[in-house]
Image (cartoon, rainbow, N blue to C red; front, side):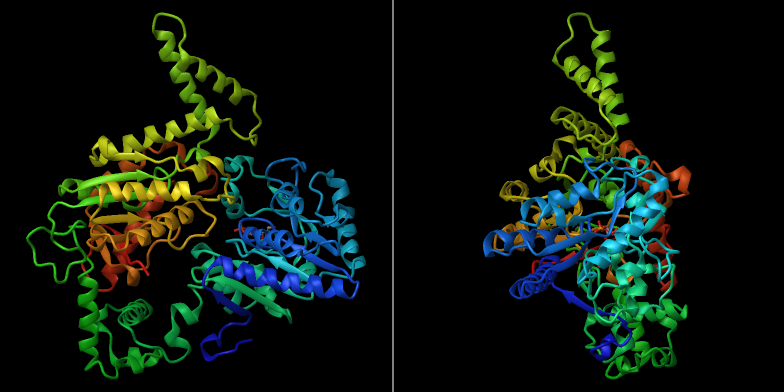
Amino acid sequence: MHTTESQQRERIQTVIFSDADSASKTLADEIAGLIRERAASGCGVVLGLATGSTPVRLYRELIRMHREEGLSFANVTTFNLDEYYGLTRDHPESYWRFMHDQLFDHIDLPAANINLPDGTLPRGDVFAACRAYEEKIAAAGGLDLQVLGIGRTGHIGFNEPGSTRDSRTRLVTLDGLTRRDAARDFLGEANVPRHAVTMGVGTILDARRIVLLAWGESKAEVLAQAVEGTPVDSLPASFLQGHANVSFYIDGAAASALTRIRHPWLVGAVEWTPEMTRRAVVWLSRTVGRPVLKLLDEHYGEHGMADLLTGQGSVYDLNIRIFNELQHTITGWPGGKPGADDTHRPERAEPGVKRVVVFSPEPSHDMLGMGGTVRRLVDQGHQVTVVYQTSGNLAVPDDDALMATEFVSDLAGSLAGEPGPAEAMARAVRAELLEKSAFAGDSAQLRQLKGMVRRGEARAALRVCGVDPANVKFLDLPFYERGRYRQFKPTADDQQAISAVLAQVKPHQIFVTGDRDDPSSVTAVTFALVAAACRAAASESWFVDCRVWLYRGVETPWGAAEVDMAVPLSPGELARKTQSIFPHRSQRSHSAVATGLREPWQQAEQQNRALAEVYDALGLADYEAIEGFARWTVA
Ligand code: F6R
């Protein structure tokens, strides 16, 4: 199934949208059209629905259509894909709760038409209930349209790897990666249920129309495999290839591993822009396993890149040009080298002392992504301001907060006199912690205390890097303090806070992250705020003289061809970077021992080493580790 030459490898109709909002709007229009068409002839519509971050925008749009355009859901029946097993309906993370909060409570869908698998039944009753769920779908006339998201394991619904094409509604065990991805919602992986009830792959494939939505770079690899790979039960979404009426609506970041985007020269003619040329040569070097300077005509020819050589002079001319470009990304002077010729350096030399703003979505992102570079900037005399955009208090386990209350009480107890207000707060918070269930929401004062835990960690980390404590800002952006994961709604106050920092510091350099993340994530929301603040400042004289650099977290590091500035770290610098991650104790991985997955500092180390290895393999210098940055410009 493909419509153009560049899509020849795609076996599912895949539409790339400019952003998640426009994709969601397109699907909402389709759903609304179906509902109205059926209503006009007195018939009903049966929708299959999904939960998670992905469909939130779709549901917001449907609610808007209901409120502003009179779209009625009176003739709609819904069946949800799945439900965690063992959660009661009123549990804040139950899918029943999610669907009511995000959609059902805001539209005129009759309660009797809502169906979700029941996660509360005794084991012995689950099988019969699953069969009854299937029968109810069939009795309703089958699913007219099924909405899907995709998990990083390639699951649809909770059909994890190993699910067969003809599987039906059943009790399943969740994959370790799926449970880790849900750990934040559940305030710790230990709280994430191990099982769920899900429609089967076969149940989903019986729907007359299927639309899968996906946003963010973390979905890109699995999505490309589902669209271009052979259908296999190790990647259940790939079974959608067998369906006659399925579409994937995705954003640019989620599309980034499709061949037409990542390696377009393999599927047709491309326009050889400088950026595309560099990407292709790096890819060729990696693919044939030879350094750039040793690539031969036949390597280009055998890999669909012969036309790249036309007009480039000899193969050697092209190789050396790209080699030099890569070489010029490397600098030990991330703030520019004062007094040096900067024609071929990623940063300009002047002014010799720069005002630098490092935005960190939560405390710890800064150190994981660019701890080594922060240290260098400070050592090289730049004025580094680190701005923590959110408090990060949602990610602090209760145990860490409990320790903090004990510390306050011990301190108060060691001093003579009546217990003061701090001790009273510590006591109240401790009482709350000891009473609350693992999933209950935190009171304002508990969140405040958890935020303080992260502030303390952040300060300790910055001490390792030598950042002046006077240049640290904790913005505690309101969208985060008001919100929950997946459901953040930034407002003008958030925007104002970011713009105010920039107006005050007037930086020569900004470092920021989150540009290609799932739009509902903290990193993506905070990136969007910085991007908007930069756009608003675009005509200010200080901004004209400002460079914006993107750093990456450990989940989706830069590929070598995307890096515009590569800051090498010596073994000693890498060790020091690691020490600047250690203070973020509350962010240690709770599953490391059980799963063999590594701690955040180990992941950061591994990513930085991996980038250095690629530079080495391309024929550049052999460094211990590299932190990579890409330049961002206001569009
Ligand atoms: C949800 C579901 C899952 C999610 C998938 C993606 O009902 O069945 O397959 O669609 O895990 O989750 P998000 O959207 O949170 O990235």
